[in-house]
Image (tube, rainbow, N blue to C red; front, side, top):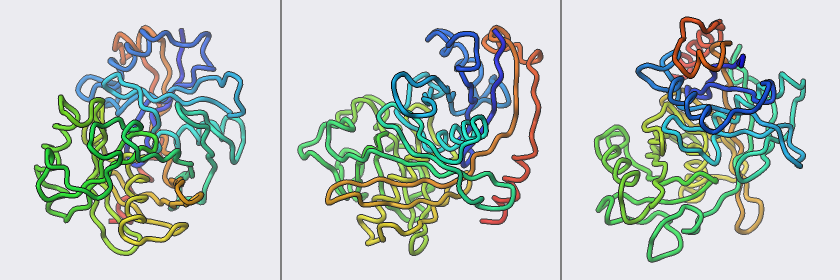
Length: 324
């Protein structure tokens, strides 16, 4: 079976994007796992591997243009990925010549649209991040209270205060100073909550956040199923939400969110007295166009794969230099 795909990234959160609707048949679960193992490995994978696979599938009985599935590099399936959704939005916008539409994800149909470029030659897309839930069953977590908002969790730290929110991916967030942001404590806590622990049975994404100024934050994330990443879109949105709630930020204000892989913009909305949703605005970069057979890709015969590099990564690196 012949396969065409893209190597893409949002804030350097990188993926192989494959449109299954263009194949002679959808992948089997085994084929998805074989592709993930072969392509995404950071040591032996194609083009230095990736954080995961983005699969574009047909919608069954819905109004969305397509369905997005996110397969992490460790084989787990994420309920959502904001950085990945931007690249899928771009792919679909160009395929169908549409400016705005919805994409089906695991828990919701999310609005996406083309946005004004963040910088010259930086294709930019705006995507909805929702639903938002705080209660224990949505995470899931075991705790004496139903929610954790700006509280010390004694099993993790005696002084750091954490908040937990699902957007819908679950996130554990702490606001810290710069030394703590880059220190060893981060990895210790993140590794603990993603191993055998009494609180988060399924693990959880962990973000440390530094407030740089008014509506200006830096987010560093350890992703469940991946490890430290250049950026995590849902983490940046969850962190923006907690910034607004805890630091008296404004609903509807544009927040600049810097990360290891670059910068995005977010907007936090209050839908009603207890409902929130976010907009995530950032790059959707295509670094390579690729084609090959399923067997060559799964068996790592990468010398037989046709690889065409674009100029977009060079443009993105110019953008990175402009914001540092």
